[in-house]
Amino acid sequence: MTKYIFVTGGVVSSVGKGITVASIGTILKSRGISVSVQKLDPYLNVDPGIMSPYQHGEVFVTRDGAETDLDLGNYERFIDIELTADSNVTSGQIYSTVIARERRGDFMGGTVQVIPHVTTEIKGRLRQLAQKSQAEVVLVEVGGTVGDIEDQPFLEAIRQMRNDVGRDNVLYIHVTLVPYIGSTRELKTKPTQHSVGELRRMGIQPDVIICRADYPISEAIRDKISLFCDVERRAVIPLVTVDSIYEVPLVLEEESLGDYLVERLGLPAAKPDLADWRHMVGCLRESRDPVSIVLVGKYVELEDAYFSVREALCHAGLFHGRTINLTWLHSEELEKNGELPIALRSAQGIIVPGGFGERGIEGMIKTVRYARENKIPYFGLCLGMQLMIIEFARYAFASDKPHSTEFDPATAYPVISLMPEQKLVSDKGGTMRLGNHPCHLVPDTRAAAAYGAEQKVVQERHRHRFEFNNDYRGTLSQAGLVFSGLSPDGRLAEICELAGHPWMLACQFHPEFLSRPNRPHPLFRDFIGAAKDVLREGAQPTLPLAAEE
Ligand code: GLN
Image (tube, rainbow, N blue to C red):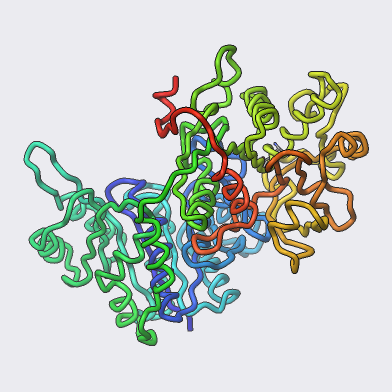
């Protein structure tokens, strides 16, 4: 029988609830316990697919093609599992299912209500994941903050679960912020007390409180939270901000959270094996020579928009014993005339990630040209591949006309165009080419070398509507563009690289989603491998964007 751990958040958002959930997964898995994870998102969008990255951060794509919350990326990286659409449930999905059933007449003339109809649908989703994954423990993160109106049906559903599956099979963890008041130099527990009060009003008494803080939490503070919130002293877990998110599982383990969870849920009490994780964190803490990488995109003000890319770079850096000095450049800034920013002129590697829409496109193309002409390692992801092809076509045809029909529908050289199967699609949500698709590697290419001789076909995750237009394959191949990864029917260009350049490669898929801290993605690994040996003059800037302007 599956046990459930429900994690709620209190006081404020962005306290690192997702990382905490992922880390709990790590410490349970290290005891040989099978784990699956689910995120409940209270918003009314069906999924984050068409939400602005500024609102939501990155859209994480699962192997079965669901567009999901970026926390799923952290669950996959921390627990080293692959999740599916079942792992991200939104209010939008719940309500649209319930309303569709009402229209079908499924409720036999009854009045359709939040309790029981909406809560029953939510519980059905919880059970569905438990059943499909057969995991011993399903970790459920409730998005939002306790007290939000949107959260209430989810809180009510997880409350009901206690009776449905039995008290011994569920456990509630509340993650709160313990703020620091500068003038009196004190940490304050009152917001935590209020938040637990709010949770109790919904009928939920937390079993564990995880206290996020920027300063060490004293024994007295722990005692106070234990007393006022009626939580066992050993279940008040301090989680002080650490340098790297990958340290969090070790902090929780140090506080014996793993043993406590196992004891309370009656799970087999095996000794945790965190040796590999500890080794990885040890390497992270060591001082390493930097590699200067520049990321050029249009959502750089919000680093969460490229969460998996940043992590994949970090993993690849770890592999090579290097730290990644990542500078974020706004593509629109690069469209201005004048000298290129020092960060770009001293970059050892350049990356253009995925994106949509016209804003900043010419700045990205300028970046690609700079990488090609100056022989700087370049890695393009999805849009980054389309722009590498556009830039190369502009060079090969000696014309500034080649473009994608996404940005210039009437271009004379549509080197990137809408996939035929997309032509009749009108809905925006969930209609792109999504999820895993096989890619055949072409022998004797950089791509094939990266994945290794034994890999002839790889599965990679996709999220795009536009593709390379094969009418140009012959001409561009002759000019030096190598198509090194193709769909099984040979039609779709999945990877391309440039002959005669030290390392200029791009892919139509999103390799960043498959990278793990202990197992970097081969393409990221080789990109950093190429970049680390590049010698550049000038400073190696680590300044944030604001200082660049
Ligand atoms: N906008 C491009 C497309 O739809 C690229 C998408 C992406 O980078 N994820 O094909």
